[in-house]
Amino acid sequence: MPLPRSKDDGTGGAPVLNLGNARVKLFDVEEHEQPYTVTRERDGAEFTFDPNFKCSVEVIDDGNDGADNGTTFFESFKYKKDKKGKWHNQENSKLGALTLVVKPGYFDDDSIPALVADDLEGFEMLCRVKPSRNPNTGAITGSTIDWETMQPVPTPEKVAAAVSEAEEDFDEIPF
Image (tube, rainbow, N blue to C red; front, side):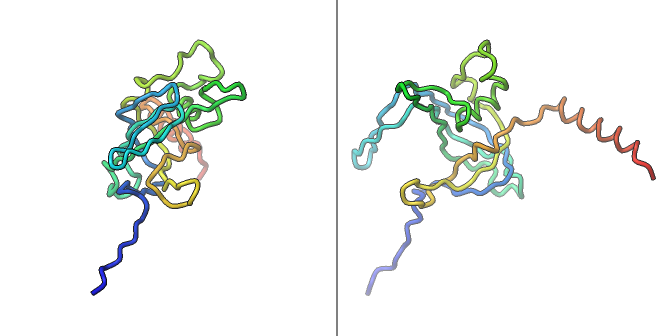
């Protein structure tokens, strides 16, 4: 009798999420300022990664029914290499976008200190979480943060100000 077939979804067990407006928290943040090599335990294969911040991401609020709240996945925010071969935090990149959410005005104000792992540990933001794809095969491999949608979580002061402004505008509507 033939054995049953099983299709490999390519995710390696990583969750595949598609959340339009999620609140997420970063944790277990590590910064690598130079390229680094990782050896896979199961077969000894080695992989070299560009400098980055790597971390785990927890979905705090999935923006829907809560079914994906508490789900975690891995994420990285990579430094970019310039023409001279030096690594840097580039403004129009995933790491650059994260930096602007954590430290608004960072690229315009040299007095703002550089982003470090401690700045990201426990940091919460709003963003879209989408399926990640292998760039070579197109296969879905898990989940990733859509860097163009990252934004800070509104502070209670901003929410209160917006509500107050909306109430004032409501009074001015002619009936």
